Length: 101
Image (cartoon, rainbow, N blue to C red; front, side, top):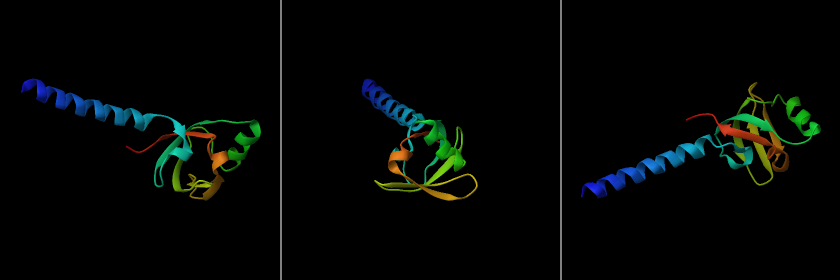
């Protein structure tokens, strides 16, 4: 009986740890959900792509809010409150991590 209780608790701990690891895992902004607040860890791509995002005020450690997502467009709110739409191909160059716990 004690062994069963231990394994149940251990399984719950492992599941919670897995969720936390997934939470802090950097990924493309296209893989996050509407309403998520994220922080930019990397901007991949050519200097032209990086300048494209810099022109919108998006650079390393910029905090963004995902307003909406679709297969073609990701709408994000920048720190100055402006909502910009980025096509999904370009948006995949933004590597982010979830900001809020």
